[in-house]
Image (tube, rainbow, N blue to C red; front, top):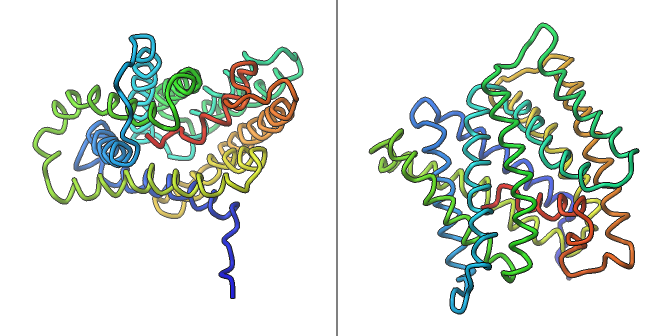
Length: 310
């Protein structure tokens, strides 16, 4: 008798929730360790696991091979640091939603159809709504979320470039290590010997597992049978998932206007995802890299799979 197979949709949804649970654990510890310290512990965990399983081949590599990896490492470290500093100041659901501005803007710049600007405008409207109304968002937290979104856009571009020179996730493993080393001096300066406390080390490792290892593993299994279009649409639900988890576990209740803002960004993301899939299905885009070389907008879906997995 065969064992019933878990639906790939559920695997992706559990992965999305796992990322939010990792963020919730992190936020609960910001009173004991600064955000950059938690980012360092998380990246350390994921880097060690990636290096143990991937073991990148370093021999005969040229300087040209290393440039995109260095860019990816910088983007990964800056993105996570800015994002963690952001949701230390503003609600998690708001931070996740604002951060989506980066890849959505990149998708618009990669498109040649004026019609796509409508969806970018919808996303911009949603982000603007966070700055109006009776419940305003902390300006520093808002700016840091936008910075994280910009780093996410750089991450998308660097992921495509790295994937053309490094097999599998070798480039990601090295970029994660570079990000960890780059963050280390700032983490040590701000967190000091708290980085060596066994309890915080264990919780940092837990955050690394929840935010990187668990979702990445589930997504890799799900993507064996799940169409990229469906995957992209599910990932577009991440702002809503973040808002729900934060409301339940952190009591971060959002105003109706803020919920409308999240809905605008989510709708824009879903629409961009559908267009990406049509482009990817075109015969002239059937490249091994998912068409990222010929279609910049398509890079968003492929990079979002590993967005915070490093």
